Length: 161
Image 1 (cartoon, helix red, strand yellow):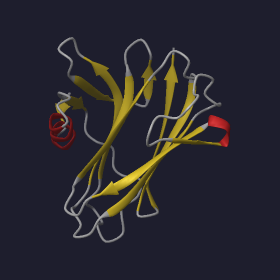
Image 2 (image 1 turned 180 degrees about the vertical axis):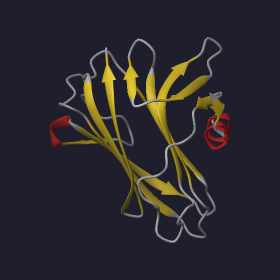
Image 3 (image 1 turned 30 degrees about the vertical axis):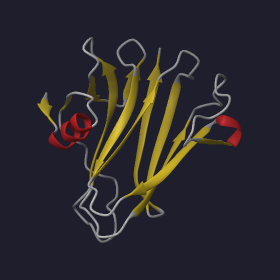
Image 4 (image 1 turned 45 degrees about the horizontal axis):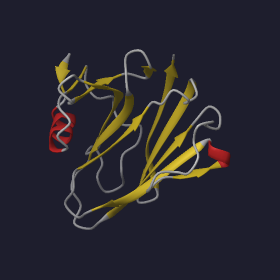
């Protein structure tokens, strides 16, 4: 597997470790005004014994192999701030979800988790991680990412036992 520089940069900047993969999939959509400047990487996350996190590109997230999943977006910097929103669609309402953590809200009786924020002017990288908990539902998931109200990526994946 070859190293993905944008993912590596982001994870190292967070102090997470290394990222590996066979190359980022092409984006499903580009952001208006930044055509051909979007790179999106999605995969399973595994915490190494030294505490670093390794990302392996995959659309099948096995609880036996991964501790979570996440994504990284690299985009051409903009002179103004940009709003982002991530929507995670679960196959069924999460039984173990009670009070949402700060920065996350639930919709549709807990079958959609939403978080959003702002990219500062000049920022090129955005990434988020999710842990897999024992009570999380196995099945097909969908993650949708929006920048400035426009959908820029939909990632479908499965979590298995």
